Each structure stands twice: as C-alpha cells, then as structure tokens.
Length: 258
Ligand SMILES: [Zn+2]
Image (cartoon, rainbow, N blue to C red; front, side):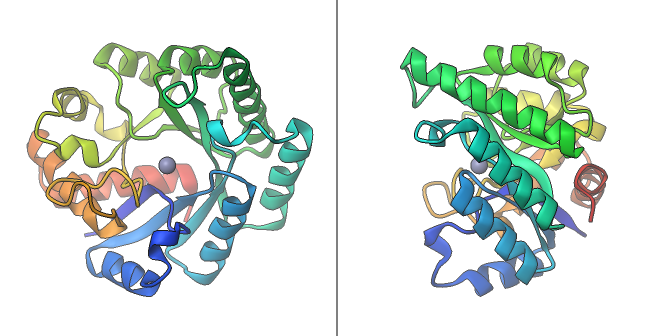
C-alpha cells in the first residue's frame, strides 16, 4: 500500500527534536510521498530544503493569506518565481487563498485577495498546480478562482464546505482534499463530502502538525496519522483501504509529478 500526504508543514518547530523519526514512521506506515507547503517566503525555502534532503518530500512555495500584510506584492511574486525556477523540487504553489476567520478588517481582506490572485497567475505562468486554503471565505475563493483558474490543477485543501459548494468546485475541475476532520465524531458535513466526492477528484492529507485525526485529536499531527483518515473514508465509501490509497496516490502523482 502507498499513501500520498498532499498537505503538511513539516518545517514546523514541533518536529525539531524528532524529524527523522517522523519521516521513518511515515514510511513504515505506507506514506511514500509528502507535499510540504510553505506559508511565507522563509518557510517556502525550508520546504525546498526538506525536499532536497528527503526523496519522499516534494515542495510547494506560497504566501498564506494572513502572512501577506507586511509584504510588497511584486517583490514577493518575483521571489516565489525565482524559488520555482531555481529549484526543481517545487511542484506546486501553496498554501494560498483567503482566510476571513482570522481577519475581519476589509482593507486586509482586500490585500489577501491581491496576493491570492497574483499567486494564481504565477502558477498559471509557471504551469504549476495550486493548493488552496479557504476559511469563512468560500464564496470569494470560488469567484476569484473562476476567473483565474490555473489549468495545471487546483487542490481545495481540507475541504470543509457544503456539498453544493463542492459541486461548484468540481465543475471548475478542482480536486477535493480531505484530512483529519473526516474522523471527528460529529463531522457530519466532512463525512457527507467523503461519501459524495468522486474518486478521481479525491486526495488525502494531514495538514500536519494541525488537524490531528481521532483518536489523537489535540496532539501534534504527523503524516503517519493519515492512515486514520484513509480508514474512515474507505469505510464511508465501502471500499478497501488499499484501493482508496492507490487511487488517491495516483491522483496526486498526476497532479504533482513524482
Ligand atoms: Zn496548511
């Protein structure tokens, strides 16, 4: 069995003391590939460094919505472009998007939108897929994406919206990525999404160190725990874990390369 964790942040300080063990245990638990996503320029560089040092790791570079306020847009986009051009390990632009949960200020929301659109267009110009974070912002994300769609592919990371919204994103051609929340006891909507999402558009992720699946909820997440998410979705879809892991692995390879 092989599993692709399409969203994690393994440069996080919480892995400083046992990073090699985390990777070793991921591999022992069938996680063969991990996409590590930057959330600012520094962490994007850290993601690239990890990808250079571990053959199981691929890198994504990007600026997270709430990380953009102090930055100059043109300089940031140029830096991201150079990171992609100079490092073949970069397979995706992310984590980008809009976050209105942590941000209520209209001016700052407008700045998030500018960075989101510019990074979508960067992905287009570099022919890379994107990984998108949407929190309390799904309508705006949809409207922006509709007009700035990167043809190489779009991952809706940890999709947590309604079935109706999922259908709209699927219609655009997006992939739906599911993580730990699917395993939570009262997660009615994520379980419904897991049931209804077409297999050819489904990806698995951890968002480690965040969103740890049941029964480790509240603890530090790591790639090996993706097995709990795999098990839950396989049970919801009434199929074997082997088959589900293989289909989603190949979906990720198709999108991100090897
Ligand atoms: Zn993330």
